[in-house]
Length: 68
Image (tube, rainbow, N blue to C red; front, side):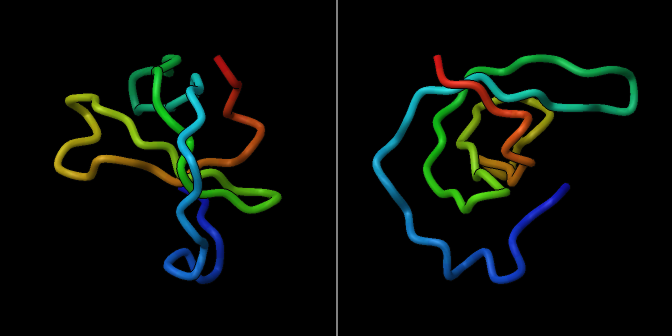
């Protein structure tokens, strides 16, 4: 998964409802979530999905995120 060079330095911002494309070994799916941290190229999306647990979010490429 892509992430910024120093992800802990990216500030948390107000939540924005989004759909994020997640790619698994057996396919891909669109998952609802909330963008809470971002740079020009990367977005940290809070998601609640069984395949993401115990982590409650993922860094993804900005091209994989759409506002809801």
